[in-house]
Image 1 (cartoon, one colour):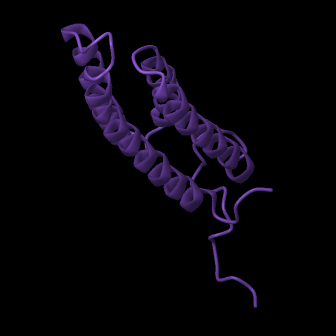
Image 2 (tube, one colour):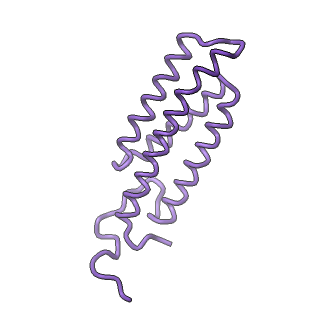
Length: 132
């Protein structure tokens, strides 16, 4: 099944992807507090990694409507999952975000024909009014 208007569906799914990456960035900003209370503590390297990841996730949300945007967001799921090495709770939080991202890719595949592709402007049925 493909969307009746793939361009519009692609824009909507890009917005969902952007919103998800912003939420991932915000969740990453909460991790240092949990790490500081753990036995290993919060080192400068861990804090730098987490802050850089949060900034990159939020910046990546801005390119979700461009062709490489979804690919960049997919690649960023790996460093997000690796935050579980700092705090075990992040395995679950990042895992939930990764599962949502995989679901988003599946919906993109169903509606656009490809999880990473961008629909061409002439692909949709938006040439005229819908029949009633």
